[in-house]
Length: 141
Image (cartoon, rainbow, N blue to C red; front, side, top):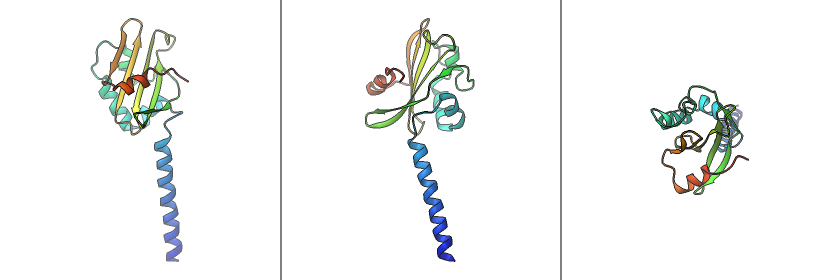
C-alpha cells in the first residue's frame, strides 16, 4: 500500500513539473491582453515600462488596464541565445498609424517595447540591447 501511494504521488509530481515546464516553454500563440491579465510578472513589468511615460499614445499607456487594442498571437524569438516572447499590437482601425512590438523575457520579468506612431514617431522603451532592437524590428508572421 505504501509503495502504491508513493508511486501515485511521484507520478502526480512528475506530471505537474512537466506541465509547468511545458507552460514556461510555450512562448508562441499567446495574446498580450490575456498574458498581461493572467501573469503578474508580465503585468508588473509592462506597467513599470509605460507608467508615467510621455510621448507615447494613450492606448499604449492604458494597455495594462484596458484591452482596447488589436493584438496578434505571440511569437517565440531567440535573442542572444535565450527564448523571448514577441507580441504585436495596434490601435483599432489605425494599425498602419499606431502600433507596438513588445518583447518579454521567458519569465515575463524583463520587457522592452518599440512604439511606432505616425504622430509621435518611433520610441523605444526599456533600453533594448542591440539584439532586442533587432527582434523588435521583426515583422509579424
